[in-house]
Length: 329
Image 1: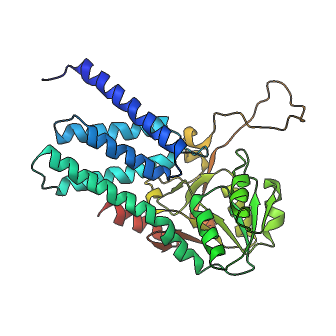
Image 2: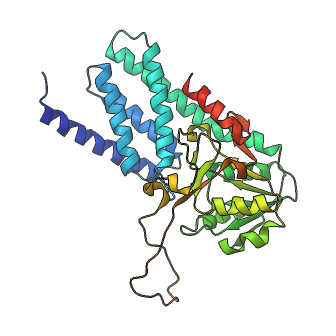
């Protein structure tokens, strides 16, 4: 039976709501990486899809992905970039799978797409260990390390180094406006890591005593720069001026086909938070205060020393070549 346009539209709306609800629930009740959650949601979408054609199924996957990007929260107040880069890579894998598929029925096609999805989940899960292995070669006892913001892969690598007997002294800026550095401090000190929390305004003063800077990234762009939580760019400038290595730890599924040249090239949805910043209740703030509340900033490649990824260690200039390999294979 052929559905009318109105019926198809209603059916898609219900599907999109289910996709968002499932993503939100998994994100709130599990500790899985947001990229794994996104793909698991897509697996359920494919499994339960009523589409009868390959074109209809791929449209459903793409539409659901865009809906999640625009409506879901990845956790820790992340921008849409962290979901967009994952969805772009996932869509690429799906498209390539369809091009080479020899499936002779919709069920066989769906099975093929489910296999591809699971393979990508396995890659994502292994990525932290691969990055950690690369990082350990650069870590040393008694190093003083400044850690920017909150990053799962940075925290994981530091904890694994600690377990391996490599104990470094960690300096963590508070990470306003979300104060994400406090969560990084909490997770590291829970296992006995020697850490010091510092005010964001003290980064320049502390930097001269630092041996290296570590940060994650919400996205790695085509020219080898990164988009990350606001303050990353400022920290990178300080590190460059004081000749300190600035290392980025990022999974390859965060590589994205963007090419910003300045802060103005970032979209407003990435640059700015819609939330009001939090201030101490003790402060006497003026009424109707006008403020700018940036969410992310762009750090250009000339401020980055190396990028540690699950597919290798790269100089910023090598990132574009790796992107070409990812999207041409």
